[in-house]
Amino acid sequence: MSLGAKGRQRDFRIFARPFHMQVNLTNKQVIAIAAPISLSLVLPQINHMTNAAFLGHLGEFPFAVNGIAGIYYLVMHMIAYGLNNGLQVLFARRAGEMNYAGMGRYFSNGFVLALLFSLFAIAVTYTLAPLFFGGSLHDPQIREAAVSFIRIRIWGLPFLMLMGLCNAFYIGTGHTRLLAITSLFQEVANIVLDYGLIFGKLGLPAMGLNGAAVASIIAEGIGFVAAYSILVLLKFPPRYHLFARLKPDFAAMRNILTISAPLIVQFLFGIGSWLVFFIFIEHLGQRPLALSNMMRSIFGLFGIFTWALAATCNTMVSNLIGQGREADVLKAVRKIAGFAFFCAAAVCLLINLLPYQLLRMYTADKTLITAAIPSIRVCTAVTLLSSVTAVTFNGITGTGRTRVNMLIEVSAVTIYLVYCVLVVERWRSPLHWAWGAEFVYWIIMGGLALWYLRSGRWKGKVLQ
Image (cartoon, rainbow, N blue to C red; front, side, top):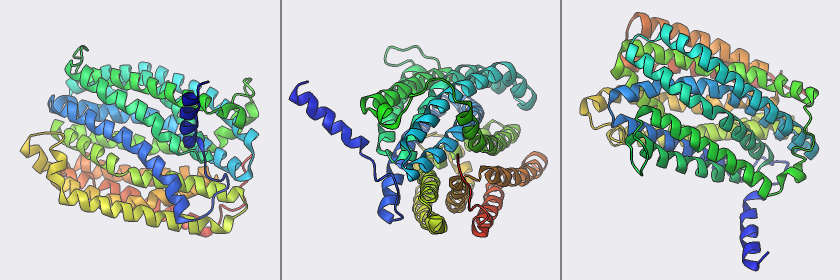
């Protein structure tokens, strides 16, 4: 190997240099874990905003369809997110114990589970999605376009699940800087392909709405290749015993599912309720659905700090318990929640100062922009509440008490759906009152999560 090649390899290895496997509860370390996660999250959200902006320029119809079909795909993605969140807890716990072989055991079996779950989701989508959209959506054009879109889009799920497994490993073991690299490959490809395939630019066919689905699949494939190429290039498999045992370990799978299954159910309930919310919004008309898609896009982008800090809380709590430092758990949750609230407050101030400028990225229709302003105000207030609640809730995830997460989620979603049925479906209230459902959800969840953590009932949980 030439000196130049050696130098380039050495420079790249800087990204693989983790913090000490056992975390310390300092502001510097919270930021060191959360900042790369934020960067990795901001890239998909920028992509989503770009995607929404491209479709918005085609009119309200594709924008509305993308909203409802995108939420359906998000529900399927929650299978991956729940599985990988559980694995993240296990990786962080083994990191706290300095147990490298244990990480490899869970990674290999997580790979098998990710493939099985993604194939199951594809089968469900092809058989049941037409029935679901047919029985829930009122507009036949939106119904037909949503089925066409999602039958293409779902093929990206295996790539997304396996890339998510890599990300869970990076977060759980402290290699969070690598998240930005894999996300960069994926999202640059997605934005370029969106532009080409939606509008027929760059020598590509003009596919409109379905072009966004095809672009996302290809981009997720590129992200998957990038994630596993980095894994091999930095020699993580021998260091952490990844793929050391290719034969399925059913005891390991059982342990993974013991932690992950309640999270999968929890996330399916949470995002599933949001799908019901968007279906009710569709019953109000095409414009409210388009407006709600704008809200989802804007607050998805500006919520990245909250979700990065929530993932940080999950990892740090599990790691601290692995070190035998249960007494520091509540201190960690309070510290990280403070960071989250500060970031959310700064974001909300920015959004309320520049709402028209943000909304013009999606549409030039002044009446659509004006109609969105009341909902913007409601969503900023929800952002403040969710920042503290999400961190607190992920503190419970880090303890390994994922069944408690599920019970809290089910309780919050049940009350949330009652509000949606009454306020949105029956009373046909204005859109900003519909978005008030988020207040109900986050208040119930936050109150129950805080009570459980302070009760101390989570202590003594051992993860095999």
